[in-house]
Image (tube, rainbow, N blue to C red; front, side, top):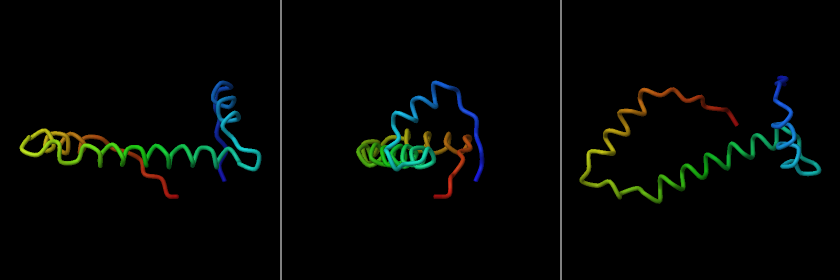
Amino acid sequence: MKNIVVRDEVYEMLSRMKGEKESFSDVILRMMLEKRSRSLEVLRKYAGSLKGSDMLDIVLEERKNFRMRDFDI
């Protein structure tokens, strides 16, 4: 378990989102999973719309320049 520091406004937002039997960790995890799910939905929605375009290759090449942290769940 780790402690983190958040601004008061962030704490208030998380507190409002938190269910009665839910921890702050549960809220953060739920938000992360929902975001990941939405991202996949967007990708699936537009998959194939770039056929015949080199835009997909450009996007994939640019993504190599970005490092994203992956979280174990």
